[in-house]
Length: 336
Ligand code: TXA
Ligand code: MG
Image (cartoon, rainbow, N blue to C red; front, side, top):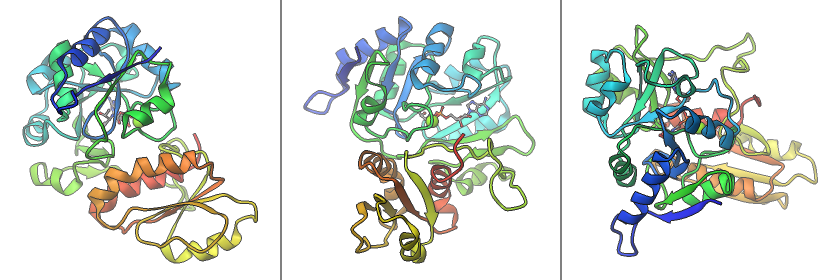
């Protein structure tokens, strides 16, 4: 049975009973889905191996895919690392709490179950008040991947979490929709130069303003320009066949689809085409922050509409769109 815990009272204050209940479940080795400013996470006591193993079971996630450890601040991160690179300190000073994850050398105290056996650990201090209250109440670091079944779309509401994980986890700490809507930026500070592994809420330009040497990790491509399988795995993916296309190829693409197709669209500004096979058309607008916030909810709705085909409008190739473009490429990428 999964308990539903409302994190706030009807008056909008944090509910101390809900937070304490969630903290007790985590401390006892249970799994609680928690709101963060990026997406909902599936949290467990990061130093409890058995609890961390349950995360992989609940998600159906391969255990070599490492987890992010959530801490309140840099002081709480100190016992979890073997060495804190100066660059990590600089970035944490500037961007924590917030949507930035730092990959640093791990302490042996962190179980292999968290790091997938790597000698590094990914750390993040979330800014969401509910996540922060829970971290304070439980007093332990929280290992938390996004709270979705492996390969599915990340949850940005508590209802999304319930749709994927109800009955598989102990509780959902519910606090409305997430502000950022896309997962955190991940930067590896154990390499030279430091590498941006996953674009997210903090942009490459913002990182470079603090740490000019950061490079974008280029995804290896084969001769045909397709991403190699495994490196560009299909994540954040709706169940339908998914095509990433320019706004001006929507017409020709529709023309080539079967007569019995059930087509969903995720557009920025392209209007809904007049075609009876279209069962859902989501228009997200042209503001990157709005699109980030609403993208996954739109993908969840397209999933629920039972589409056979989903058309994704390709965003502009400018830095402010990079995190969104990354998620759309993965949604349309080869299945892993
Ligand atoms: O915004 C977020 O980051 C959300 C919230 C819940 O904090 N969490 C999240 O976790 O997106 P997850 O598990 O879905 O993604 C974690 C990413 C993966 O791409 C994983 O490979 C990478 O972080 N990662 C974790 N530990 C790593 C490590 N030691 N070295 C390199 N990458 C690592
Ligand atoms: Mg995830």
